[in-house]
Amino acid sequence: MDEREHLKVRDLLGPYVLGALDPEEEWEVEEHLSRCAACRAEERDLRRTHERLSDLAGIHEDPPPGLKPGVMGGLPRRGTLRETRRAPIFAAAAALIALSLFAVFSSSGLIGRDAMASATLEPTPRAPEASGELRVRADDPNARATLEVWNMPNCDKNEYYELWFGEEGGRVSAGTFKVDEQGQGTLQMSVPEEAGNYGQVGITLEEFPEEPRMSAAKPVLTGELEGS
Amino acid sequence: MRGIEDEVLVRRVASGDERALSDLYDRYAGLVYGAGLRYLGDRGVAEDLVQDVFVSVWRGAAGFDPGKARFATWIFRITRNRATDLIRRRRARVRMVGEDVLKPPHEPGEEDSAGKIARSFDVAAALSRLSPAHREVLVLAYMEGLTQREISEQTGAPLGTIKSRTTAALRSLRENMLPEEPPDG
Image (tube, rainbow over all chains, first blue to last red):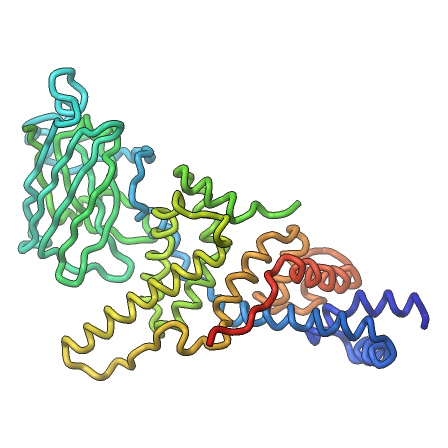
């Protein structure tokens, strides 16, 4: 057997099982296979691999491009701080700061495992039936928040809710979530360190793939934190 | 240079590395989504499945034991279990509202007796372990459906090189895959 031909055909077995050779090359491979047991065995092995890869290609489907930012943005927080996104928030916030969370989280008198702050979340006209409660506990090493919401409007496929701590001039996201079919949700999340500087909380309806922005147009629930 | 192994990425995810999860998403989201479409028959629910699966990976990474299973096997099981949950929830909803318009989807496994989906997760894992040049030629041929000549034009490599590289890449993939098991009963 011609060794050069043998090596050449072995190199062509991949495109051969793919059906990607031109007719002349295909004939050359098949003619060689009829005489070479080693190449026939190799061709059988490569064809099985080709079939498994073809199965994968048949199942694989690219998800919508907007899905990944939604998935990554909706990850439950795990004690690591995320980037703080600064932007103007509720216009009336400055006048409504009843209590700074800073006092709860950062002052020497209140911080500790039992330090608590809570907010009753009141609906906006966007969701007049909705309500919620937020409780924040300054556990070590991170503050933890428990959020309960009721009667929230269901999100469309490309929408989600986002919880914010903020006041005029600054804000930070504490995480994103969706509610169940009854519009209810109970979530636990780590609170970003920066939240200790803010006394207001809000939940907004956001839409991906747009960058979450605590949109002034879509606040659903708002409230003020009070220490206990 | 080989791609970073899935199991290394999972360790990083366990330590809170979102970029590692992003890499795993790039490797497996298409397969989870495609499996979701087969299991659930609805694009919106398949998107929910992708979200559920990757949040589960994020939450469960610390408990993943590479000594017990490959990551590909683990994420396939998560996909199958979450899909089953979604199907049961959807069936309950269909019963609740008394509609019979929605065709009840099949439980994962009913339409996958040959185990194609399960095996495809293993192939995806093997694909991620190939060198970039080998992975590229197979992705372009199988996922993008390019001809050998088109791959040659796209990559700038001579046609003969692409042909022999395709063969070498298939051999390398074969060596990285788990041996085929008989399908589940």
